[in-house]
Length: 400
Ligand SMILES: C[S@@+](CC[C@H](N)C(=O)[O-])C[C@H]1O[C@@H](n2cnc3c(N)ncnc32)[C@H](O)[C@@H]1O
Ligand SMILES: [Zn+2]
Image (cartoon, rainbow, N blue to C red):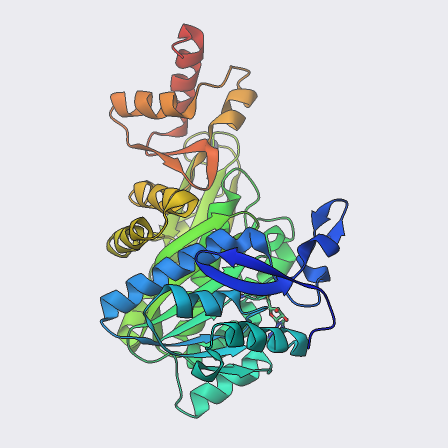
């Protein structure tokens, strides 16, 4: 029996109990870490996406999946996988917090599912390592820790099946990944971040590169299928398979970023391009900042993302569908977005609507896309100088 007040919630079509969030507020807003068992309603969209991804993946694999949620909180994610998809063959639901485990049991009992799940109270690394050593591996592991997933990646990768497994990873330590604490980012992810206008995309790319490198140690190849930034977290879904050659190929897509603050030029370079990474910007002679290692390849697998969008269309849709469609629209865009507001403000010109900027870039023969990373930014292959000229022209002609 829980010794704290519970409230009944609904996410997707799933009803469940969680701590009453109104009791754990600070300055009027709920602080999930204060609650005796973790539940964050703000992550509902992330769970909606996870439900669609699991359904899409199970459909693509033409099989039901053996799933593990090593850090399950109140169990809402696990419950939603069971109730809102038909892709789960078996599920292991774990949390280190005994109060969370009692609540998971209560929630599973509520739906008559307690006998259909293995619910345990273990350290995530212990659980995952013992699953690997027993040969009891998973088709899908959903890693959703407090902060960085880095301390759990090795055991998670060892616990994945050798063929066609899916790894889902959340990181909420954005101050590190976005460059406010570079030393901590080096420590956790072995990578130098870059603070600035497109730091959230750099954060996703660092997380991918780190997971790919850790997996490669085990001759395991990870390919990012769907990646995003939302709210206070970044999240990546990888497909994995055992194979040294494939792991080498994935490592080949890791490289470095060279960024010039003066003219805003930026370049991703695969491999170890020491000679290509000039200290002076080739466009303007300004000082170049280097970040990485990071993932230089695509963030989405368009085919898989389209299937996930279809699943979201069949479900209730709403903001999750809008979000997934935006990811799909920008899937083929050039990397590393430009913050139009920031550029206009530095140039002391009024800021045109993003829609207008995109239309005008396309009229001039460039590719241009909205991005989910930032509603005031564009992804384009136009050089930064051309973008600035266009923004100045738009503002002087008041074409908007
Ligand atoms: C961010 S919450 C998980 C939220 C959950 N996945 C969801 O969607 O609601 C992180 C959880 O990890 C648990 N935890 C922290 N350290 C752990 C560890 N070493 N092993 C297992 N669970 C751990 C915490 O008790 C907490 O419930
Ligand atoms: Zn420059």
